[in-house]
Length: 112
Length: 114
Image 1: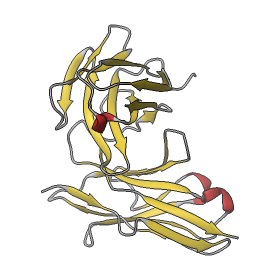
Image 2 (image 1 turned 180 degrees about the vertical axis):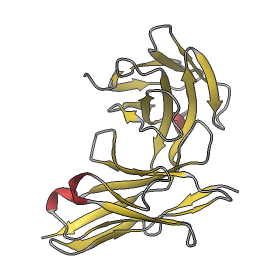
Image 3 (image 1 turned 90 degrees about the vertical axis):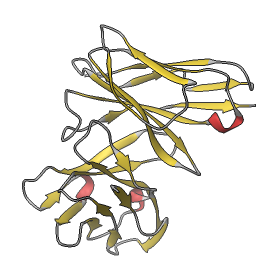
Image 4 (image 1 turned 120 degrees about the vertical axis):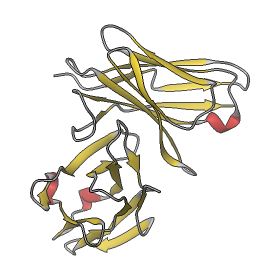
Protein backbone atom coordinates (compact mmCIF):
# COMPACT_ATOMS: atom_id res chain seq x y z
CA UNK A 1 0.00 0.00 0.00
CA UNK A 2 1.13 3.53 -0.70
CA UNK A 3 1.86 5.49 2.46
CA UNK A 4 3.87 8.32 3.98
CA UNK A 5 5.59 8.10 7.34
CA UNK A 6 7.08 10.95 9.34
CA UNK A 7 9.22 9.75 12.21
CA UNK A 8 8.87 11.88 15.33
CA UNK A 9 5.72 13.87 15.96
CA UNK A 10 7.75 16.36 18.00
CA UNK A 11 11.34 17.48 17.44
CA UNK A 12 13.23 20.02 19.54
CA UNK A 13 16.53 21.58 18.52
CA UNK A 14 18.60 24.42 19.88
CA UNK A 15 18.82 27.68 17.97
CA UNK A 16 21.73 27.38 15.53
CA UNK A 17 21.69 23.57 15.52
CA UNK A 18 20.97 21.27 12.61
CA UNK A 19 17.34 20.54 11.83
CA UNK A 20 16.53 17.06 10.51
CA UNK A 21 12.95 16.00 9.88
CA UNK A 22 12.40 12.52 8.51
CA UNK A 23 10.01 11.34 5.83
CA UNK A 24 9.73 7.90 4.26
CA UNK A 25 7.27 6.73 1.68
CA UNK A 26 6.07 3.39 0.44
CA UNK A 27 5.58 3.09 -3.31
CA UNK A 28 6.69 0.86 -6.16
CA UNK A 29 7.41 3.85 -8.40
CA UNK A 30 9.11 7.13 -7.51
CA UNK A 31 6.40 9.60 -6.59
CA UNK A 32 6.32 13.37 -6.49
CA UNK A 33 7.39 14.58 -3.04
CA UNK A 34 6.70 17.81 -1.18
CA UNK A 35 7.42 19.45 2.16
CA UNK A 36 4.94 21.95 3.54
CA UNK A 37 5.10 24.14 6.66
CA UNK A 38 2.15 25.29 8.73
CA UNK A 39 2.32 28.16 11.19
CA UNK A 40 -0.37 28.50 13.87
CA UNK A 41 -3.78 29.45 12.54
CA UNK A 42 -2.57 29.46 8.97
CA UNK A 43 -2.77 27.25 5.91
CA UNK A 44 0.11 25.27 4.46
CA UNK A 45 3.03 26.83 2.62
CA UNK A 46 5.25 24.90 0.23
CA UNK A 47 8.88 24.65 1.32
CA UNK A 48 10.17 22.54 -1.56
CA UNK A 49 9.28 19.79 -4.00
CA UNK A 50 10.93 16.89 -5.82
CA UNK A 51 9.71 16.14 -9.32
CA UNK A 52 12.39 13.78 -10.67
CA UNK A 53 15.00 16.38 -11.53
CA UNK A 54 17.92 16.89 -9.12
CA UNK A 55 17.84 14.61 -6.08
CA UNK A 56 18.98 17.42 -3.78
CA UNK A 57 16.26 20.03 -3.68
CA UNK A 58 16.68 23.49 -2.23
CA UNK A 59 13.69 25.33 -0.85
CA UNK A 60 12.78 28.51 0.89
CA UNK A 61 14.08 29.73 4.25
CA UNK A 62 17.31 27.74 3.92
CA UNK A 63 15.67 24.29 3.90
CA UNK A 64 16.69 21.49 1.59
CA UNK A 65 15.78 17.85 1.13
CA UNK A 66 17.44 14.90 -0.54
CA UNK A 67 15.54 12.23 -2.43
CA UNK A 68 17.04 8.78 -1.83
CA UNK A 69 15.33 6.17 -3.94
CA UNK A 70 17.14 3.23 -2.35
CA UNK A 71 15.96 4.32 1.09
CA UNK A 72 12.55 5.62 -0.10
CA UNK A 73 13.26 8.74 1.92
CA UNK A 74 12.94 12.49 1.50
CA UNK A 75 14.32 13.98 4.72
CA UNK A 76 14.21 17.72 5.32
CA UNK A 77 17.25 19.54 6.69
CA UNK A 78 18.42 23.01 7.61
CA UNK A 79 22.00 23.62 8.76
CA UNK A 80 21.19 26.22 11.42
CA UNK A 81 17.82 26.53 13.14
CA UNK A 82 16.23 29.89 13.71
CA UNK A 83 13.50 30.77 16.17
CA UNK A 84 11.19 31.58 13.26
CA UNK A 85 11.42 27.94 12.10
CA UNK A 86 9.13 26.82 14.92
CA UNK A 87 6.09 25.38 13.16
CA UNK A 88 4.55 22.10 12.04
CA UNK A 89 6.07 20.42 9.00
CA UNK A 90 4.29 18.01 6.70
CA UNK A 91 5.74 15.66 4.15
CA UNK A 92 3.32 15.04 1.28
CA UNK A 93 3.40 12.62 -1.62
CA UNK A 94 1.56 12.36 -4.90
CA UNK A 95 1.54 8.75 -6.01
CA UNK A 96 0.53 9.57 -9.57
CA UNK A 97 -3.09 10.43 -8.90
CA UNK A 98 -4.67 13.84 -8.45
CA UNK A 99 -4.34 14.11 -4.70
CA UNK A 100 -1.74 14.58 -2.00
CA UNK A 101 -1.20 12.07 0.78
CA UNK A 102 0.20 13.76 3.88
CA UNK A 103 2.30 12.42 6.69
CA UNK A 104 1.13 12.95 10.24
CA UNK A 105 3.31 16.01 10.70
CA UNK A 106 6.28 16.95 12.89
CA UNK A 107 6.05 19.84 15.31
CA UNK A 108 9.41 21.60 15.45
CA UNK A 109 10.34 23.50 18.60
CA UNK A 110 13.39 25.75 18.72
CA UNK A 111 15.13 26.11 22.08
CA UNK A 112 16.72 29.53 22.60
CA UNK B 1 -1.97 37.83 -7.43
CA UNK B 2 -4.40 37.28 -4.61
CA UNK B 3 -4.01 34.00 -2.77
CA UNK B 4 -6.59 31.35 -2.06
CA UNK B 5 -9.43 32.74 0.01
CA UNK B 6 -11.82 30.78 2.17
CA UNK B 7 -15.01 31.98 3.80
CA UNK B 8 -16.02 32.00 6.50
CA UNK B 9 -12.89 31.67 8.61
CA UNK B 10 -14.74 30.42 11.67
CA UNK B 11 -18.05 28.66 12.02
CA UNK B 12 -19.99 27.23 14.93
CA UNK B 13 -22.85 24.83 14.27
CA UNK B 14 -24.84 22.31 16.24
CA UNK B 15 -25.28 18.60 15.57
CA UNK B 16 -27.72 17.83 12.80
CA UNK B 17 -27.29 21.12 10.99
CA UNK B 18 -25.68 21.50 7.61
CA UNK B 19 -22.89 23.84 6.55
CA UNK B 20 -21.47 25.25 3.32
CA UNK B 21 -17.87 26.39 3.01
CA UNK B 22 -16.56 28.47 0.15
CA UNK B 23 -13.19 28.62 -1.58
CA UNK B 24 -11.94 31.04 -4.23
CA UNK B 25 -8.79 29.76 -5.96
CA UNK B 26 -5.93 31.80 -7.31
CA UNK B 27 -6.88 33.47 -10.56
CA UNK B 28 -6.22 31.11 -13.47
CA UNK B 29 -6.13 27.97 -11.34
CA UNK B 30 -8.61 25.33 -12.43
CA UNK B 31 -7.99 22.63 -9.84
CA UNK B 32 -9.41 22.92 -6.33
CA UNK B 33 -8.87 20.35 -3.60
CA UNK B 34 -10.36 20.10 -0.13
CA UNK B 35 -8.74 18.61 2.96
CA UNK B 36 -9.90 18.01 6.52
CA UNK B 37 -7.36 18.57 9.29
CA UNK B 38 -7.92 17.21 12.80
CA UNK B 39 -5.50 16.53 15.66
CA UNK B 40 -6.33 12.83 15.60
CA UNK B 41 -6.45 12.07 11.88
CA UNK B 42 -4.13 14.73 10.52
CA UNK B 43 -4.66 15.98 6.97
CA UNK B 44 -7.09 13.90 4.97
CA UNK B 45 -8.07 14.38 1.36
CA UNK B 46 -11.76 15.02 0.74
CA UNK B 47 -12.09 15.64 -3.01
CA UNK B 48 -10.62 17.44 -5.99
CA UNK B 49 -12.36 19.33 -8.77
CA UNK B 50 -11.06 20.38 -12.13
CA UNK B 51 -13.13 22.36 -14.61
CA UNK B 52 -16.32 21.64 -12.66
CA UNK B 53 -15.70 17.87 -12.63
CA UNK B 54 -14.83 15.83 -9.56
CA UNK B 55 -11.68 13.92 -10.47
CA UNK B 56 -10.88 12.29 -7.18
CA UNK B 57 -12.60 11.57 -3.90
CA UNK B 58 -11.33 10.52 -0.50
CA UNK B 59 -12.86 8.09 1.97
CA UNK B 60 -15.53 10.27 3.53
CA UNK B 61 -19.23 9.52 3.92
CA UNK B 62 -21.78 10.89 1.48
CA UNK B 63 -22.65 13.67 3.92
CA UNK B 64 -19.60 15.44 2.52
CA UNK B 65 -20.13 16.84 -0.94
CA UNK B 66 -18.71 19.55 -3.10
CA UNK B 67 -19.02 21.34 -6.37
CA UNK B 68 -17.08 23.72 -8.57
CA UNK B 69 -18.46 26.57 -10.58
CA UNK B 70 -17.48 27.77 -14.05
CA UNK B 71 -15.29 30.50 -12.51
CA UNK B 72 -13.40 27.74 -10.58
CA UNK B 73 -14.78 28.80 -7.21
CA UNK B 74 -15.68 25.80 -5.13
CA UNK B 75 -18.01 24.98 -2.28
CA UNK B 76 -18.16 22.04 0.03
CA UNK B 77 -21.21 21.03 1.98
CA UNK B 78 -21.54 18.87 5.06
CA UNK B 79 -25.01 17.72 5.97
CA UNK B 80 -26.27 16.31 9.25
CA UNK B 81 -23.26 17.52 11.18
CA UNK B 82 -21.65 15.28 13.79
CA UNK B 83 -19.34 16.22 16.64
CA UNK B 84 -16.50 14.50 14.81
CA UNK B 85 -16.81 16.89 11.90
CA UNK B 86 -15.18 19.61 13.99
CA UNK B 87 -12.00 20.37 12.11
CA UNK B 88 -10.02 22.83 10.07
CA UNK B 89 -11.11 22.55 6.44
CA UNK B 90 -8.42 23.56 3.99
CA UNK B 91 -8.86 24.39 0.36
CA UNK B 92 -5.98 24.32 -2.11
CA UNK B 93 -5.72 25.36 -5.73
CA UNK B 94 -3.37 24.33 -8.50
CA UNK B 95 -2.84 25.43 -12.08
CA UNK B 96 -3.63 22.10 -13.71
CA UNK B 97 -2.42 18.66 -12.77
CA UNK B 98 -1.54 18.48 -9.12
CA UNK B 99 0.77 15.54 -9.61
CA UNK B 100 3.84 17.71 -9.78
CA UNK B 101 2.47 21.20 -9.48
CA UNK B 102 2.42 23.06 -6.23
CA UNK B 103 -0.87 23.30 -4.41
CA UNK B 104 -1.51 26.71 -2.85
CA UNK B 105 -3.46 26.53 0.38
CA UNK B 106 -5.95 28.94 1.86
CA UNK B 107 -6.03 29.81 5.59
CA UNK B 108 -8.82 27.34 6.24
CA UNK B 109 -12.26 27.41 7.79
CA UNK B 110 -12.39 26.24 11.39
CA UNK B 111 -15.66 24.43 11.97
CA UNK B 112 -16.82 23.69 15.50
CA UNK B 113 -19.80 21.39 15.97
CA UNK B 114 -21.52 21.58 19.38
